[in-house]
Length: 411
Image 1 (tube, rainbow, N blue to C red):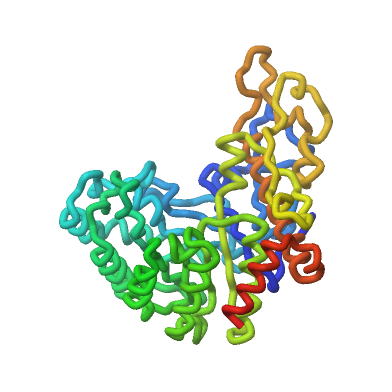
Image 2 (image 1 turned 90 degrees about the horizontal axis):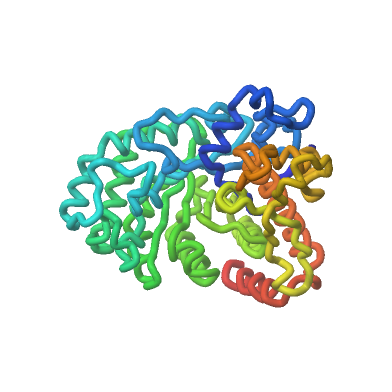
């Protein structure tokens, strides 16, 4: 079993989806499903100690994956908080989109600004359900946010599309007040106060100025306050937060939403190192859903990147997973790049051996691919961070230049 994770690097959180978390809670696979000897669905739960394939105690899970009001119980939520670190996403993306299965009865496309604001004011049952899941099941969680991107032309289907920037900032400040008044905060639980912005940098300033007094553990950077604005706006956001004293007194965890590349793993680790010179316990984490969504939606398998001295070699390659009737009887492993890839044969990945079947995979095939992809990404980030600290002369010049920029801005 391989163990990932170091305190010296930014922490990547795979965004674990509903199917993966629920399947990992099952006691056994179907009796006629061919799997490796001794395999159990719980072997997919990489966040548990002594896992069959690899151990990595960090993950993200979103309340937005569920129909509002339902009870959320799966392998992630049932694992002791003492043995894993789970960041809960409050479903801001799904709120902004009002998308399935999360969509809430009072929020509909085409609402006027006043209608949307009134509907949100009346959505107390929704807010309580979100807060209940986050505080009961997670170690840290994003505050409830309605994204500023809801106002953009491309988001015409958002219930909040007609709202102004000022109205949404005020609404999100009210969300924080609601959390302050009503949410029970377990011991050691951290709220990550979500910071949004648009391409106009002044919107980042307006948002921070409105919400910075809510300090219960840390911050989450989204939209143009995070990755959308590239490294320049991300550094701007961090410097503004520091200027306001936002990292003091234990508010020193920053989560960056929606990124998962080798070069960004290196950038965020460098930011963490720089800020630890002033805040010794400062932590940067980041997430994306790519390893699971690519496996389930596109049946894609990741390969280990070479991480050479050109920027192209820092992209994690993806190929279609091996699928076909010829593989249904093959005892060869489906990949040498991961523990599960070496354990599952091609036949186990291709259980449907009916001659004219359009697809040879089943859900377990997708989840085995997802586990493989997470493993490959963690390995890539670990190697990338090693190169950035111990073999800097081997870095692509674009990455080396960006690391120098980070140090110039933050040291």
